[in-house]
Image (tube, rainbow, N blue to C red; front, side):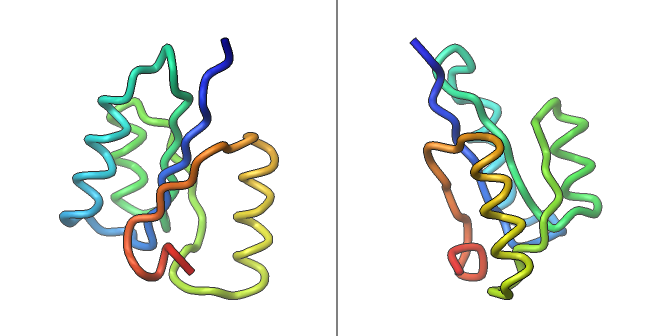
Length: 93
């Protein structure tokens, strides 16, 4: 049975409530069932996720712009993402 690929998307680079919850979800998902990655705007937040052993991806998700949308689509295709969990209004865009 193949694992379900889940990508958590945050539109920030600083640590707050949504970022804490996203990290907790990623750390606690069953790795036998889920392939988990977390994407954010970089900075200290990305460094923290990677230091915690998470598969961290840097992407500008601060709003909708064609170049960023194309980069996001490329990540989804390359990683064969099944589920995107967007945290926050800007990430939803």
